Image 1 (tube, rainbow over the protein chains, first blue to last red):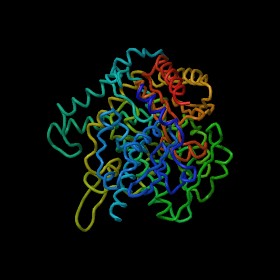
Image 2 (image 1 turned 180 degrees about the vertical axis):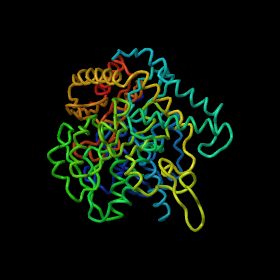
Image 3 (image 1 turned 30 degrees about the vertical axis):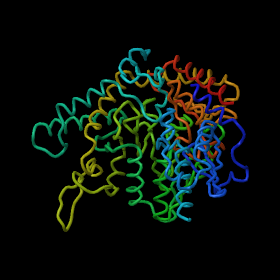
Image 4 (image 1 turned 90 degrees about the vertical axis):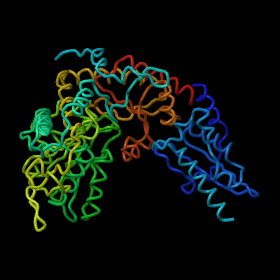
Length: 119
Length: 407
């Protein structure tokens, strides 16, 4: 349960995304929790801002951002998210419909692949 | 009427003694599917060990006993819902399959452009989408009986919605999202005043109360095996014989035919006309064992116990500050759906899971219901005859703890 207390803590910290980006264009629909994802290139690095309406999802989103954001598109596209398994949160990436998080990770990789191909 | 021995019942269900995330399993997701007693599990093993053979087709011994067992289930289902004829019982793969058969085949026989199909605001997607698909195809119109804040259907509005263009009414007996029990007998009588047939979705009813299709005068009735302590992959479509006879078949193939030539094929009679191909034989046979299990306990006894449990659960959970119950109809069955101010249902579901408590969160395949209440979803605890007051206490404590962590 401590793990979830920590994740909730992360989720409760300041909002991760500008209110103006909480719109249809940036929404990723999981079955239950909504996730907003906004990508931006800064120098040659891909920076993500994201948010969710469910606190646990938000905490997990913040973990993903810490790991993936600020790298080159190529690095993100190829990233192997083994740490999820190592910290025992693999269930949150399982393809059940409940999961906005899995959809968000897929979308991040898609942005990265697209931006990498654009170059 | 007799009091059920819940401890004895629980001992019949092997899965109830397992742990989840290091805690004893508290299984409160019976609306999604029920657990199986060893009587059903053993029957499945026996089928594959002793009997397995294709049904309705063979001349050898195994095929005979399999066929007999399958038809014994058909007879048990007929008795279970008090249908008039065995051939009015079609074995399907589930409720969704059954509704699709009716929408497609009753649709082909009777529904044309500008005709109306009347459903309700509390339906499960399986009783919405097949009708939408039919409407799109033939240009018919879907009408919806509205629902009030308590989750009860507006009977005034229902009467007004029935007109000479209405070809069928399709409504749920018990709402899976809200627990509302609809006055289906009265609603059927009203539709019949206009000669309009009624389909009843009894998926959340047959395991909780006596359902008598002749007493209700239901024209069609559907339900699933896996929600009544039976195997997955089997369900029932009941239809009055004259209605089923007027409908073309659904799937074509083996078993539903009388004679096949390349020039012309004639169809088999009921029930086989609607049972193309090899059915889920083991599930069909063991559905009979699930019916036996329920009958041994007695539906009246199950209903009485579950009502007590739901009343207790409702009382206890209402004490949590900021908690609002969604679905407060005067007549309810076995479902407790709720939201907590400022907390996403998904988060509560995750914390409860870590405590070994299985509930369902989200829209429960009833997005229109959630839209009406303006919420993303609910936390839903749904009860079966093996749940206990102690489990309710754990649920309440779990929700309190989750809310404490999340708010």
